[in-house]
Length: 456
Ligand code: ADP
Image 1: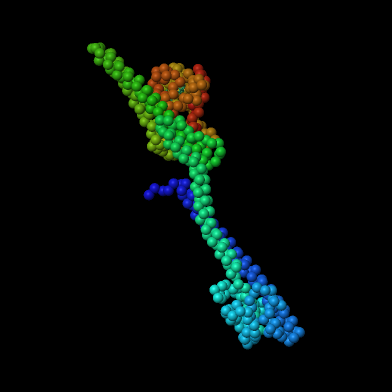
Image 2 (image 1 turned 30 degrees about the horizontal axis):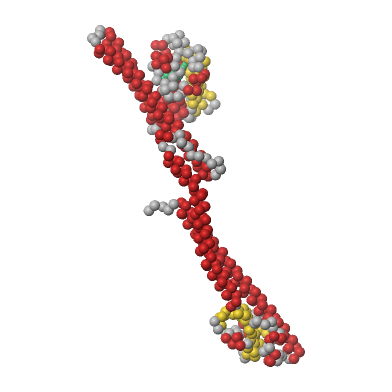
């Protein structure tokens, strides 16, 4: 079953809470009114009892007892409006007003407290507040009808019962309208967000500037769209760059093969063509390896091991590989003493990182130059520095050299067989180890790459 719209659910909750509040408030007011009616009537009954006692005491003192005829004429000693009756100690009624004949007989005088007991009784179809109390000549009962008050209370109850549903209906309609207004921006967010798709990720939700929750929601969604857009653009760019980069070697391989086949050639020419094809194929497969690694890194499907190792060993190992390259390029590779640095990491990945930097240093340093490698401990990090006396990198290119496919000069990179992916892989490996790579360079004088990795 489809859940009800939020607006309807909000209104239903609102109406339910309001109904409970009405019921509690109505009940509370009803009870308070009834209590205050009883209190007023009881006070009246007690003051009448006081007047009756005073009259009887005076009669006892002056005449040895009241005259029954006088007792039957209460106007002299009692404020009018109440019924009453008086019995002697043996329970015989000395005087009874007509209405009081319907009342229940009083409890034995001995069980009555000095101030009397007040209760509500039903007599002849009406409610009476009845006070029974001891008086100098026996027991008195004084009663006041509650009818007028009960009618008032009844009217109040009916008014509340009839008005409540009406008020509830009005308030619910108001609540429905209000929640509609409050949710209207949410509807707008849903509509706009629905229009933003992969092809048009540049769309943004409008901000009203109120700074409320909905504005913050729009802001959060907007920054999510911005991140998605950036990621999407990076992927598109990456794919475009990758296919562009792959096209060149493939085109070279194809043209070389086509030219070689065009007419019969000498063996040396065939060998030359095949060498060319071999070089370009190697370059292509290297690039494919790098692309694969970066794609797996992007998909977070590549695990970097965290094994305890001595970084000095890895640097030494990488240097002995680079020695061969340096020698072939006529460059001196100088190793300064390596400090022992215990770190946790992935040995093959770290070796790859160092080889990328060493390979670059050799590639971009002219014959006769030299490359210096050092490893030392600095604060709580191991620091590998690879300095060369090569061509250097102009300052305006420095911020970009770690980007994918970025090459300072396509020609010089192509001549050295570079793909422009090396440094982005190196940086990724360093970051996976919780470290970083920094570079300083002076064009014409050389560059220094510094890798910092946290010590174990
Ligand atoms: P490539 O495969 O082209 O070497 P990298 O990502 O390794 O790609 O390097 C990016 C660019 O940075 C290179 O094209 C090169 O111009 C520049 N670069 C890297 N290392 C050095 C260095 N040691 N000296 C001069 N330039 C360098």
